[in-house]
Image (cartoon, rainbow, N blue to C red; front, side, top):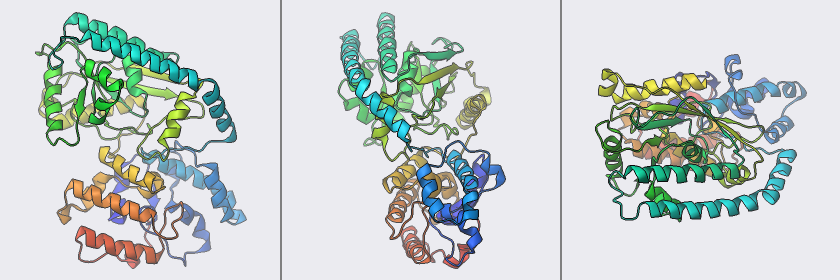
Length: 469
């Protein structure tokens, strides 16, 4: 299944590359020629065009491991392989590079000793005080209905200053603002992208952004949950099948021009964090009402530490701690002009969603890809199995759905099957970091895959071993 899906991956990405089977679940024959070893080392053959599109470095530790297995002429070609790895990382938006040099470890240790303790204390104190103020502002108010203007103004002052202090505690001393934030009378919805860090919502709130939609687990978080309820954040509860429909109806009510709600909302339409190398598929919740929206772009500037917090990150705790120990981080918030949907876009939310995404991607200078919220869960499965999403998932879930449409499985079933196969793939005997299977391993997993998916005949090794797909 993964092998067949690879054939569609090139059409859904900005960088085109030819892939040997095995980047997801296949391997080349042991009798492959010696001259092909450098390609087999990473399971990918890259075109010259793809080599120029990279954005993430191949970790030096991986380079050393590969170098040990290569002859002298092949070592001279290792730089080309690293360029290809950049291209593949730029294709998968859930791939992160968490390699730390000795200098970076030193900066991290110094920051944790000198900065982190004081910052944690300050964040805690500010959060307690401001949460108390937010809760006092809504005493006697019905949080399911619009709040009075004076309460909204009070909450904005408290929220903006609280989040500005928190930004400074993470080294964001000055958020650069480009453009003008629209008034609620112009657009009651701000759509923000790309969503890449745990601080994005804090940054948006520090420049006056309103509440949005959050997962239900956050509602039960001490302090944070109380503050989010006070500002009328909407929560999606995964254990409630009707929760998404209820939230969609409330969004439509709040951002309608005819509504008495006087508070702007801020949504991250990607629905999850990426590495900012592309814009993944937008969720339609902010666009289905057919009301004007203001696109807002986030740009992070950094030296050595990329704060991207993705589903494919194997160590999110380290990312959080490194963010806390940073001496300085710079962020630019760009408010684009209000986007007024046409009559056709109001009738077709998919068109409205796609046009806004393309507008934001054009401003950011990144491509739009078919990766989606569902791909994030597959990237998580890779991270748990200690595999890099860029190498184990060189295809999108959308292409996988297209390839398996005739099997009669639902989207949820296909996602569950894929995650189970990824976990089994990661535990396969003799697994290497480059994620390749021997013929024996491939045939074992192919047989089990066919049984799980209900396919009469498993994919044969001979049918794919010599293909570059």
